[in-house]
Image (cartoon, rainbow, N blue to C red; front, side):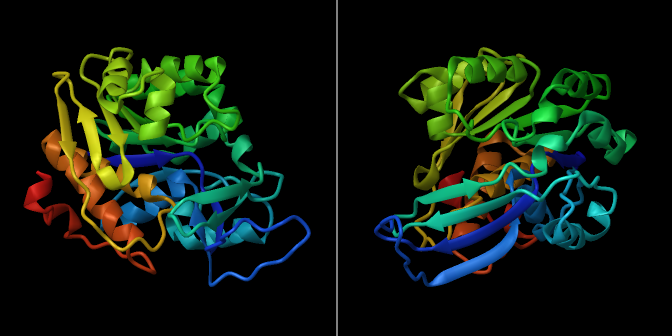
Length: 311
């Protein structure tokens, strides 16, 4: 199996809900569910790999407050070398709604302070050679983004393939954000976006067509994955063929972080050098299990128990 690493946004999530209707300003409502947990795209993907029993490296940072101390403890030895930014830890409050949608309120916090020299010092380059690095939270990690070229140069020099999930831009898909993302994609081996992100970024209505447009911006051997929620997922591989998989019908308990869980399972299968169809099916299978279990459960056999109708 090829080695894996994740770099980017690890923060604290406070999940509350469901809220329906949205409260009138100045009033108070009661909700049935709350959970304080590790969050952020990098954090969610890392916990998925841990749950699947897969070895990985992670580079992140924390803030100076009690939330930063808590995150350090949650990741144990893996979080021991994380730098402490001179600010509060980023906190996301996620409000869930009965229709499965959610609304986030996020503080800027520590994420913008993470730098490439810090990331480089936390990763064992020798052990990562020939593997994959998942790069998350681009629009939240401002300092790191300024050194993306150095990160990509390091990856190329050490035969490390970069998989990119930028997350949703704070200001939306402006032309400036599209241009920055296109530049990053030109250096990446894999793009991992959801359906809305893909179509907005590519200025295309149909997901498969949008994926092909993004693929044209990337190296010839690249892969573009589109996460389509309850409709499953699709991917375009090096041969430009579109492959698809369906999602099972499950009781949805909590969809927050589902795309990050997909990313982790997909890359774990890719690191095992499974066919692309199997990789996207693995992502959908593990993510479907995650959103339908409270607390979330993963199993080391999940990557090997893909339903036949998804392959």
